Length: 101
Image 1: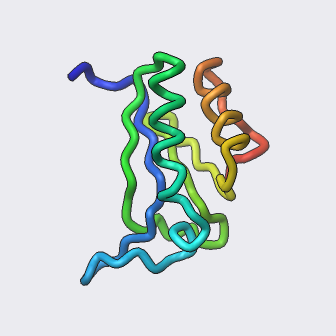
Image 2: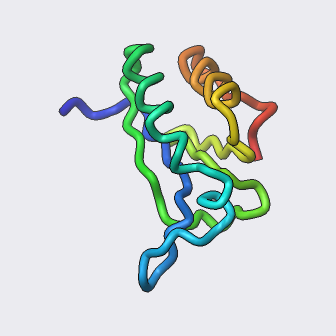
């Protein structure tokens, strides 16, 4: 596997202990967007890894997506259109500032 240029983290609201996803991001369907993100990355041919995470402690902004190494934090990522905006900006080498938190 080649080292990815970027890494997208999607909050899945997993909590310590039982590992249940109980938080805002999970309740707002963050995990349901993972296949869409993966497919878009493949279709676009960009070198990006995607990982679902535990709670990122930004519940007021959920669903939350973070892109590293750029340290771009996005909030209310609740539609395919917003994901497209973020990925378009990533391809252009800039942040999608209107969605940042």
